[in-house]
Image 1 (cartoon, rainbow, N blue to C red):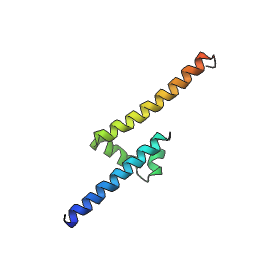
Image 2 (spheres, helix red, strand yellow):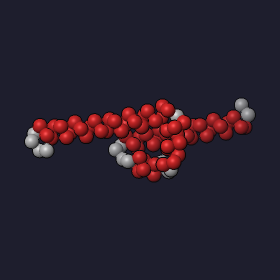
Image 3 (cartoon, rainbow, N blue to C red):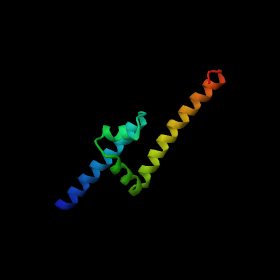
Length: 84
């Protein structure tokens, strides 16, 4: 493996780690903006990656959908108790 290939592999590893860290932060319940700040990435970078890496976009959408479902379930349970 030549120097250029090693540099590319390192860049890919770094990018993958940043994506994983971003997703973990997002799973923690923070906003996309706060997840970006947590991993020192711009929102523009995340949007670019979402367009380029469809699997990454699907993971983000899945996390957001899961969080929405959690809120809806809690709201429904609260409504059944007459609290809403």
